[in-house]
Image (tube, rainbow, N blue to C red; front, side, top):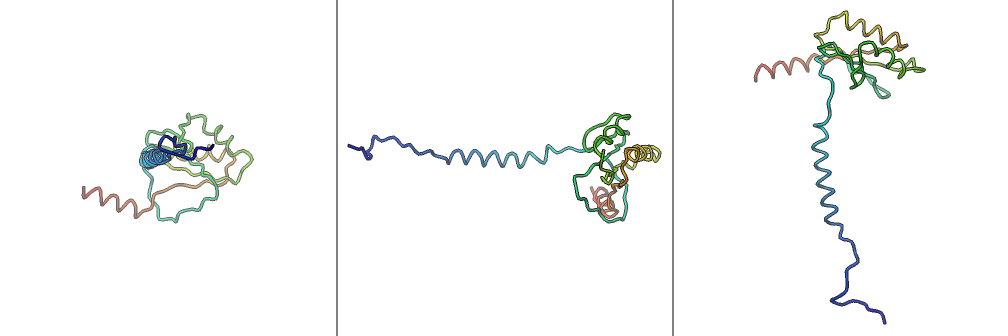
Length: 146
């Protein structure tokens, strides 16, 4: 009574090979495209000969670019809003570290004003982000060769 097979039998198995091929192509496309989508704030950092700092948690970075614009991580902040926004983030966490990245073209007074705003939020640990001295020297030498 049972029909066990024959030339007219329909195949009920799913062929996953085309699905796997499409998924691998998509994976490769996203792996190539993802680094191109990363954007940040363009800041020309001053050089220093200090050692890198170890960070225990997600970093809060305040950046100042050449034009004097202020960014909290990668989000632009209006001039009077830094204290309010940063204060809301670090509320109840006085030991939270904040790092300041300021372009070397920014006047010292502007950097000090931003540092003061950061300290006024209750942040006790403020670090300055700099570029290693040897990194700048090797890049300058490469630029001169080009």
